[in-house]
Length: 420
Ligand SMILES: Cc1cc2nc3c(=O)[nH]c(=O)nc-3n(C[C@H](O)[C@H](O)[C@H](O)COP(=O)(O)OP(=O)(O)OC[C@H]3O[C@@H](n4cnc5c(N)ncnc54)[C@H](O)[C@@H]3O)c2cc1C
Image 1 (cartoon, rainbow, N blue to C red):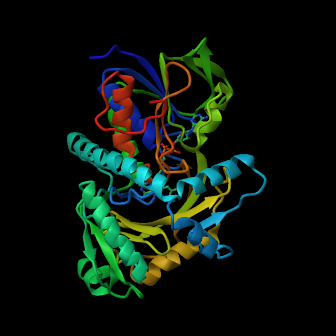
Image 2: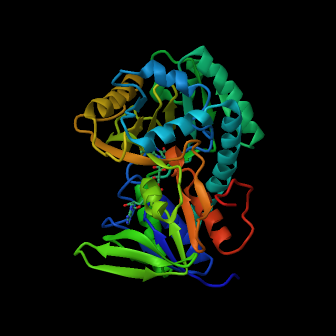
């Protein structure tokens, strides 16, 4: 075993709590610091629920710039840009454009696919080991296409996924989709689909809550209601973090190692150390409603409107939209309602939409959607952050890799580690 370390994990979302679990399992002493009153109350709270290993292609791909231009000015456009005068937003936007070229898209897809495969295996192992209950479904994900061009892309994607070892089935027309998922019987305009039977879905918030309980039992300490203000260093190494509690009392948490898992806030914390993490918040929305008789069994992705629909026990979650608009978590109900309306067009008996629970969250997005896992700019500083649109899909694998790196072991897969 490697030397036991005193590790402070910053943030109790998917990335932070899974990191805490694997680090404790490796024998380290672990404390998690979180500003909210419990785990997974920010971006990991009400996401789309998909464990979509079959979707390794990042949003930065050659088709995206045209799709963004087409949606300009439309309230229901999947992507909305509010560039304003924020230099950081412009820098991120330009870097995103750079990642839309074919070469970076191929490299990013490969890195995400490898990580997704290892993450799915890790999640399954953890679920069985701990008997975690989080409205998990192992029915797979069906990607829905509405044009012949999309269906052709689906066929290419099936070949790419096969090369990474993911089995998929191309459904060449609407009838084939409806046979597999009868809830789509009234869905208009369907051209076909791509079914990924290995994919899963589940409630990320319930998962993190359950794992937090197991972490506690295993000896991980959680400090909720504690804001991290800055990282304390001595020379070129970390020595802890300065924190403030809800009463305004400040103090220092000492640690030999710090894991930054602060989601969209990660880059702000490490900027004073001279580190520039290319993470920017990408806002999305979800709507949760009680499931109706026509709720789908499979998790679905409408590839035209970029929304996902997942059944979570007796609820249905509809999620999507991407807005480059800074750290604002306000809910634009017109856009959130447009998403729900689209889901009801596909499946009129999806659920009771009388009083949906709308939610907005900030994806911690890197330009190429490849998370930042690895060493920071000073000794003892580590990152597990920047998981963008796939933080639930990639959580367990990322945390396992981080734990291996920090413990001095060889990570299970080749990955473009930060400062690797
Ligand atoms: C609409 C939407 C749909 C999505 N759907 C999916 C999906 O279907 N599948 C999928 O794989 N992914 C999905 N995602 C992405 C996924 O939810 C995120 O990638 C993931 O939740 C990020 O987890 P995290 O732990 O990095 O960040 P967070 O969950 O935000 O955790 C960071 C934590 O750090 C804390 N924090 C921040 N600053 C401080 C500070 N100074 N001091 C103390 N604590 C601090 C925060 O309170 C927070 O709890 C979706 C995201 C959105 C928005």
